[in-house]
Image (cartoon, rainbow, N blue to C red; front, side, top):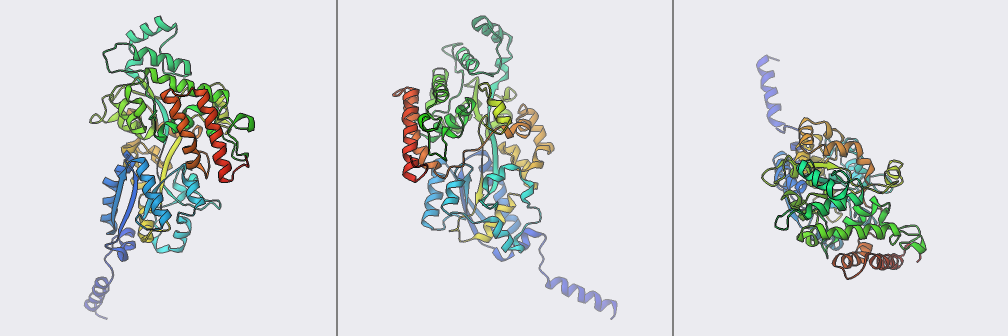
Length: 471
């Protein structure tokens, strides 16, 4: 055949073939014009998804993403009601690590492992379960299949103001008053002394001694106590023995143990040295308080660590933030290192696909898109979250790590000492039964001892009502 005819034939074949550039445009070819809808809490990682990743996905695939970011309680309410009713409003939902066990028990979620196996043409070449950190194991079913693709993970750490703790005048005054050197707290007595000292420097200043996530009427207070404070006293898994259905000491639980009561007394006692917004503070307000320079130290969720330490548009303490492990009782670190306990909360979440979704194929592509290694570093910098192993070594992340006093290094090297919520299918129900007693302790209408005695009894009653333990 003449060369001219060969060339003409080749051009004709090329013109008749789809002109797709890569996997994403190929995979999205039959889904052009589809809109997927999701809901999540308004946090730095979720806002990055809404503002950056969603538009990138639309450009790559032609699939529109409507992503609603709202308050924590509204997020859960909307997602659960949609899945219960099977209305299919949302094609992907945020699954917090602590609620996954309830969702699996109620068969709310699509098995992502099965969906990928059943749709090989929708399997992205850059998406691999093996790329993720071990945090993904929180979203496996009983047989090991994946029901959620992690989008954020972080530890709750001790932040402190390096400029205050390293000030010679403060060091001299503190030692004169307390008889030992001013330093970031490694014991609870030290935390209390630090808090008292900085809170009482000047009655007219806006500096307080510590943050306290003690919104008296919001689950954030329950979580701060049971997932951050109690473990450092050696009280794990909310003090509940799930096998026995026990929370009280007399039945084999530890929710009202001496250690738990000491922990709650310490925690509510810090309110004397905390800013007035403490009793209205959830995780968001605690971060804002610290970023505004209103507290010398505090327990702060790691999703806020990077921006508090590096973003001068949102934080007044850039360049002044220290990051450390929380204080803990003797023996707690040894139990954590042996895998028999933990020193604090490893939080995070994933996106999952409800069975009620009307656009499962498009949602499956979306979950893989946000699970690519290539999008992780910028996302980590923006939201202090890491779900992929390689992210820690990215130059961008290392640069922010240096500015954030080694937060990412701590997460990489010591993250295994922290733990997510216990694997309770009754998580929400028991939380709601117990939380009111924590609120009573916060406002002072119950002593810590009274609050935990009644909380433990209420937890057991709710577990028995749900069929756990027979108590």
